[in-house]
Each structure stands twice: as structure tokens, then as C-alpha cells.
Image (cartoon, rainbow, N blue to C red; front, side, top):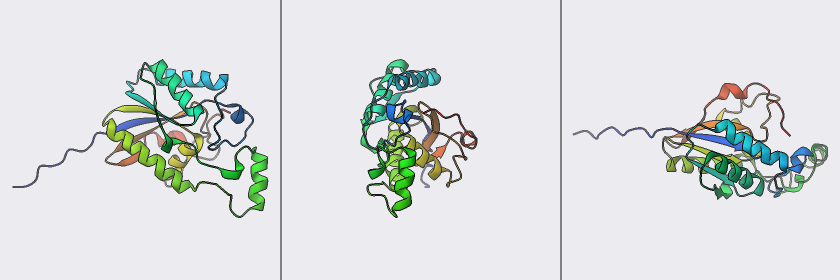
Length: 205
């Protein structure tokens, strides 16, 4: 007698939300794992992000342990009528090592003089830890819809990985408070709306 066919795991929808603005975002300084809090604009962006997702029957909110993501997640959860977010270290921003605190001109100057950057987390490591966390969260909510508040470097790294480095398009910005949808099923992630990542988006601090 043959084995019964296994039913496929229903896909989970994950809204990857970048935290709201901080003063360092406004000053175009590299944050990485430096724990910079939201400013008032960032708090407003968190509420706006929740309003854009309202009506989507979201089941839970999760967030990075860094305060700018944790507060964004808490504001979104309150607005969506959901419990306080669970905070996960695997969702924190990529470490930029000695580049943290520098503006983009300072970063360019350091990179021009150094073959390697002390403390810079390799992008594959960012993808490995964040993707594993998303797959684990999807397993908790099979067929459900969850919000995950994380960071621009994490979202950008995942988009590159899931698109075989064809996305995002030139000039595309992972804006503060923006949401990017991915689906998770059978232990694999997929971009839900890849066509939206091919065109430039409006910068948001």
C-alpha cells in the first residue's frame, strides 16, 4: 500500500517593515548595530505603516531587539490591535563595524583606504540568520500573515538573495516605514511582489 501524499504547507505571508526614522537616518549616518532610538518622525511613520497594513488580518508582530525596530513594532502592534511584539536578536541590523557612526562620505573614505572593514558582518551571514528566523516564524503561523519589523540592511540583503542579485533595481530605496512582502512555504522564502522592486522608490530618510 502506498504512502498517503503529504499535503503542502500553506504559504505564510510576511510583511518585512523597515523601522521608522532616527536622527542618524536623517543625518545619513550608518547605524548598524548601534542602538539609535526613533525620532518623532519615525514614530509617525510606524503608525502610518500600520495604517497601510490595516485590514490585512495580521496575526502577530515580531521585531528586532534594537530599540528603533522594537518601538516601531510596538506602535504597529498597538495600532493593529495585536499583542506586543516578540523581539528576536536574529532580526537585528547588519553590523558595520568601524563604519558605524560615519556619514556616507566618511564611509567612502574608510573603504578607499582599507582592504577589509573591521567588524563588518558578511552579507551571506545576514541572509542566513534572518532567513532562518523568518522560516521559523512562518512555521508558527502556517498559512497566516505576520509583520516583521527589521532594518534596511537586512531587507536589502534578503531581496538580493531571493532575486539572485537581480533586485532591487538601481536607485531603489528601502525607505523608513516601508513594507516588502515575502511568502514562506516548505522551508523556503520567495518575494511576493518582485516587480515592485525593479523600479526606483521615493527616498525616505
